[in-house]
Image 1 (cartoon, one colour):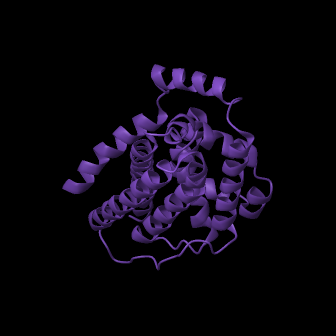
Image 2 (cartoon, rainbow, N blue to C red; image 1 turned 60 degrees about the vertical axis):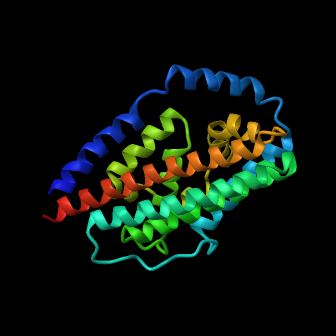
Image 3 (cartoon, rainbow, N blue to C red; image 1 turned 90 degrees about the horizontal axis):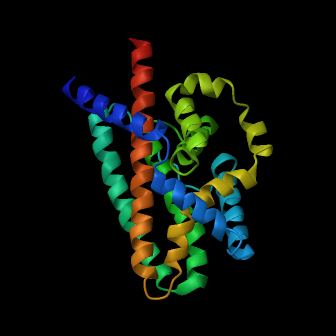
Amino acid sequence: MEYRSEISEELEAWERKITRKSSMVSRSAKRIQNRINGVIPERLHSIVTNSIKTMVQGVLVGSTYTVHPPKKNLSLQVRDQQAKELIRKYKRIAATEGAGTGAGGILLGLADFPLLLSIKMKLLFDLASTYGYDAKKIEERVFILTIFQLAFSSDDTRRKSYRKISCWDESLSQIDVRKKYEEHDWKTFQLEYRDYIDLPKLLQMVPGVGAIVGAYVNYHFLDWLGENAINAYRTRMIKEENQTT
């Protein structure tokens, strides 16, 4: 009970963070992004769009990512501990990858987009297993994508994703998964993700500082994704347990 009380406070703090408006600094950064969007090479836009489309295809209808069996009969506290260990491991991997591609200038910087996406999705698949969910099921893969959108999207989409996660059973009943995939607005999905990562990723391509920026940015992105994933699964598990008692 003591641990549940502890994470209850963490979940309340997370909810406030997710549902609040972006800071003035973030909104200013967004205006800067809008100005530089026209300067970004079309090749970069295409790489991001195709990478995201391929990623979602791999999640929903493919076998791109290794799926480990869901872990059973573990307490939430043990699951959280194992999840945090996984996140630490993936943050190190992402930082190393970001430093390597950042040191290579623009061409390797472009390669970083699909590589980083793959690392993020592998982490989410491993976390699904850690919290006892079978990522072979398509509804679990939709949950994974919802966490991804929660972490890397605009204020409005982030809040919508949070509401879906906080009432997941109800949200899932309203989703035709196959139809959702076929009619997905790829452009909007990739624009929101691209807008989230634009400024730091452009800095990663600057000669001389790219390696440092790449390592720091990738580490931060995995840290933020991990925080959202842990709290999303906590929210879901606690609600499911409350419904059975």
